[in-house]
Image (cartoon, rainbow, N blue to C red; front, side, top):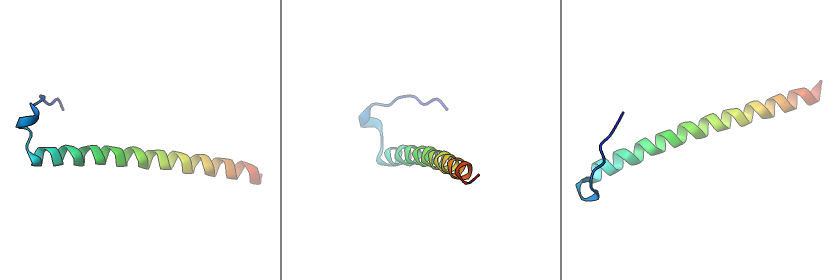
Length: 51
């Protein structure tokens, strides 16, 4: 979704908060993916040691 850039004076507090929420949601999704990859890697390593 393309957004047009606004002057800082035009950005309302609600818009700032919405942008912050969007950023945090994206960050949270990325961290969840990273955590899943780390857990998968740890499980793979642990499983291969037991054989």
